Figure 1 (spheres, helix red, strand yellow):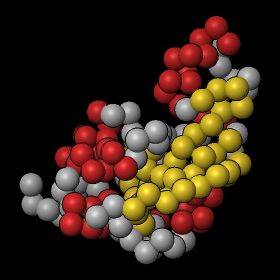
Figure 2: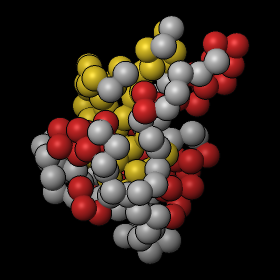
Figure 3: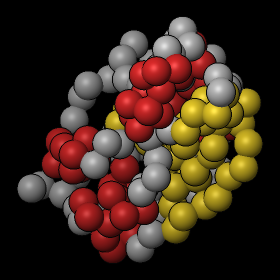
Figure 4: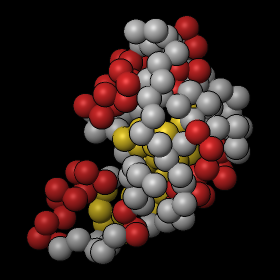
Length: 151
């Protein structure tokens, strides 16, 4: 298993060092930690098999392990391979769960502080199941990168 661990599974940060921690993992209010996680979807119901095929991202704010508010950010499907589109759509997110991703998109997201949590096993599963697996620390991730756009 790799990727971004839910911040509430880590020891509480030293309050004198809270700002760098908050900058990396969302917001910090006392010991409450907020993470914004996006889930790539083609149908609004399940995890998309590849980031480039996603029509939208369901962005969920997770407070100390409890899912909170969610919004859906739609994108044009003709934007395949346009890494700027992914970065813009995922602004403010700490990570994105998807079934696959190309190296170029992964590098673009990482350059903007967004972790790609690639989980081939999650592809096609309900969004809430993948989110719950991530919250519980059991989302199996992969470092595999496959580009669908041939660039």
